[in-house]
Image 1 (cartoon, rainbow, N blue to C red):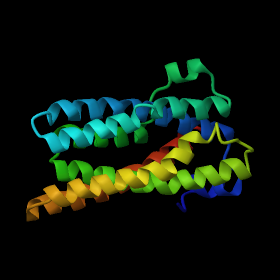
Image 2: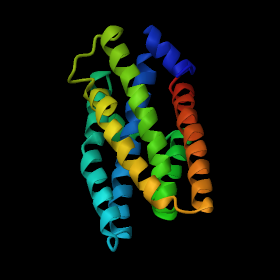
Image 3: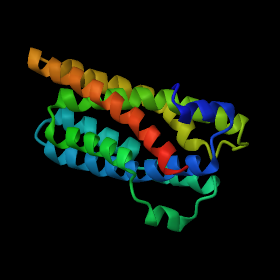
Image 4: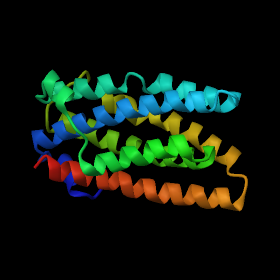
Length: 200
């Protein structure tokens, strides 16, 4: 939270272009996440607890691309901006790591990455919500993405922790959980640095 992206956001000095960058990059990311959850449902269809977990996650996430777009439109983007957007390198790396975890990792490793992501989203969504109202004059409708994420991702974090606790049943599994968590923190921080640089 001490990166230049968030330092400028808290001070009300983050440019509209960098706010738009967040909207575009998260729109792309959230679409990928929804597709990832659908694939996780198929991958785990034989295991009811995991199938139900991913079905719930998909249900919770399916509207998030639209919420990211809603925020982007409120800060000056147009529909065609979303149609033409490409992921910046660091965002692509983060999304790729998330999808790799969903498709190739063990359940515990997969959800360890989710636990980290959801915990960090809760924290920065709160920062966005406060700053966007205070410094940028955005109302609740425009801030809905952040209002929802600052609250609902607490539940998502708890659900991910339950899966990690259930499936991290060996020393190797616990090692992979730790490594997944460490890497995901780095990917997430790098993503915001990438957005900051790409939308200068």
